[in-house]
Amino acid sequence: MNTYRAFTGGTLIVATHNMGKYREIADLLRPFGVQVFSARDKELPEPVEDGDSFIANARIKALAAARATGMPALADDSGLCVDALDGAPGIYSARWADGGDFATAMAKVEQALEKVGARDAARRGAAFHCALCLAWPDGHTESFLGKVAGRIVWPGRGENGFGYDAIFQPLGHEQTFGEMAPAEKHAMSHRADAFRQMIDACFRQE
Image 1 (cartoon, rainbow, N blue to C red):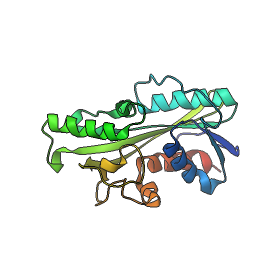
Image 2: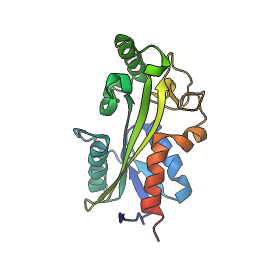
Image 3: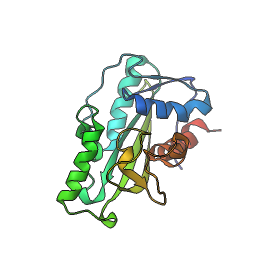
Image 4: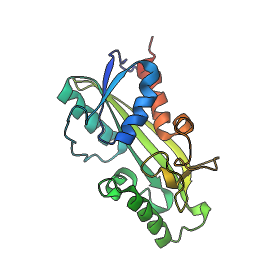
């Protein structure tokens, strides 16, 4: 049985400059009475994410923020993994967006699928992955990996969410993440999956 370190503080740094991601994490943390600040609020530089997995990159960001501020920090590293593209864009999901241009990134996904002949729904399987890492200034970390399966649709649908949400339709649902109300997405997303694991492990210990 794993023994996790409990989070006992009232303040947490969310180690991201992506305000869509920050708002989503802040919403998830709100019921626990945690005061949150973003890396942008604290004017923290963005560390080089040179890890080889979602968990490795989340750990890099969380530790950098925790050590810079002297406070516990939570980092997310997430991305879209498309089956027919051998898992791409994967850990390079943000890089496909060329500085935040996710309209271009979504078009790149569709172009890549067209190139490999993945035009029918059966060949457009995909999953969102999310790694969360909770880090303390002393270097201790706890990491969790969440996932939600679905398929790629084109053209994208919906103005809610962020990133690749408009082209991702989760299994068993007719709407894309971009069409869903935030509460509906939060209840089932990859980030919510990882978040539930973290809460059970670190926020609810006896």
